[in-house]
Amino acid sequence: GIDNPHIDYKDTLSKSFNEDSQYDVIMANPPFTGNIDKGDINESLKLPTTKTELLFVERIFTMLKMGGTAAVIVPQGVLFGSGKAFVQARKKIVEETELKAVITLPSGVFKPYAGVSTSILIFTKGGETQHTWFYDLQSDGYSLDDKRNKLEGYGDLQDVVVRYKKRDVKKDKDRTQKYFFVPKKELVENSFDLSLSKYKEEVYEEVIYDSPKTILKKLAGIENEILSGIDELKNLV
Image (cartoon, rainbow, N blue to C red; front, side, top):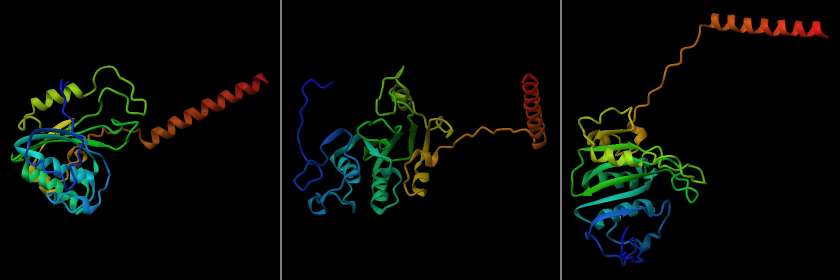
């Protein structure tokens, strides 16, 4: 933990905030699905929106020093929203930072306070995105209902840390797995969509059914067994 935390109460979206390019590391869980009055938005924020989930992403970008890194929790809508501001926000992160990772969290990790699906964006200001690593985190070690009971083990938390440190663009190519890389070119072609489901390849096991003739034969056999049982019951009456 932090022995001597220094906590300031500030509205980082307001006109009075002026701490751009000052931080090496930012870890943030901004408020979801809120809005701010247009007249109160700081002039340094250029996204054409009043949605706070987008403005906070831009604000975190401006607060980073060149070479600084952020890990930001965002609602899933930020990753695939088709509105102009959504696309511009994602474009800014992909084009003006090195977007290192998109870690998709399971729906329910913030229950009982919020049920919205979320992801973690990890990016470095001033870097260049060439490939982005996606990870499908399916368990955080707690139940995903309102009770959030502790489960055995740690879910995927330890695994995602290990995999992130060992990520290899030459090896992490199999999109049927829980982690893989996507090249920037593909992100651009898909309007900077950052949702894991856009790129993950699902594997479906083929179910082999009996032929209709075989199924009918089995049904006839079951029917005969039922009729035989009924006859036996009649004989007992």
